[in-house]
Image 1 (cartoon, helix red, strand yellow):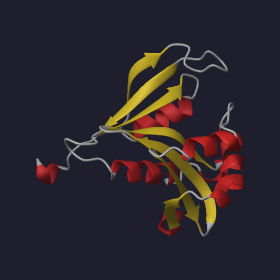
Image 2 (cartoon, rainbow, N blue to C red; image 1 turned 90 degrees about the vertical axis):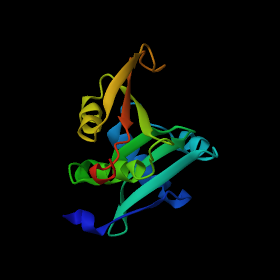
Image 3 (cartoon, rainbow, N blue to C red; image 1 turned 180 degrees about the horizontal axis):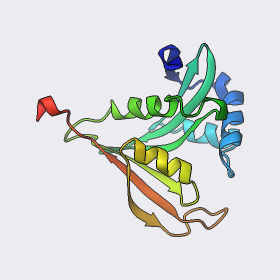
Length: 156
């Protein structure tokens, strides 16, 4: 697959035009550049970009908490979907989990974002809670989806 050439790295300021273009192609209520910069300035927030042949094709933003990671945003360029790029980003987060310490990933997702829900389910996430009227712009509900760390079989 093309993913052999994929490179995951820290998001940098120069990524913003590409990130914003993908964000606007992906979401009906996209984050603005100001929102990205405000969120990324927080000490417990990490932004990661994924490149294929030096072209940015996706990104994620997540928060580090004591017992969990929280996925705030993830998107893949429409022309590069279903190539394993989102999976590679989620796998990167999953690799940071450990038994008895940070052992889960949480993510709120719009009730209307079926593609996103199906993607997260395919990565081992499950819906655990509904937050009513979670989104101020649409009064939509959000599902809180969660992935729990699974120790690999040989360690059980």
